[in-house]
Image (cartoon, rainbow, N blue to C red):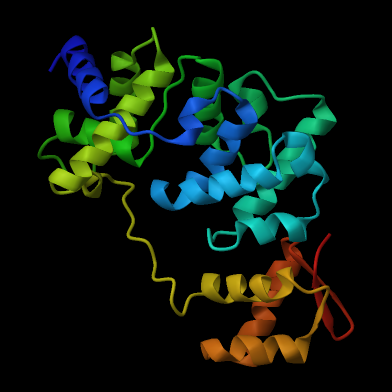
Length: 269
């Protein structure tokens, strides 16, 4: 399939079957940043409601930068992967210190918790620049049409095709179209992304360290502090040992989520 034919097919599908999401209705880099962080490892329909509530409480990068960590985590509860909320707040603080949003990928990538994809996505969706992006749905579209029978395909093989087929007249619409087409494929054929060299099955949440860490933060969000004993009793319902709880607390302290003073545990400010 030629680049022109691929573009025509993807854009035609988008005109007929485009999905509507609130983050597609803005070019505000802050709102796009929030959506991109929320969408990491979380389905779009689940994000939709959280996105609206989060922006109602933190409508600007300035309001987020001034908010205490406990408040940010409170509005993040239920989305999981709480590091994302912490990094998002730290990015907001860095943006305010710098006097405004970075205007290029390098500046965006330098923000706390912002990886190459997120930096390029913000640049494409907020500023309309011709960046080369790859994520799971985009990957699915290229695997399906350009690597129909191949297995363990690396992104290094896909990225040149993304660059070659990039619709430079409107990169923002192009990537939305690719994502929607990839999502369509996943619901109609065997998921092409499983043939990627980077495909990983998500580890079970139940019984994981992530579940325990999330439970600890959830218990601390609505309280100024808890004794270690009270915290252990609450997390014991998960069937966790005192040693497991202590190890989780050590990691949360190192990452700046919580502080321990004597026998008391509280969220970091």
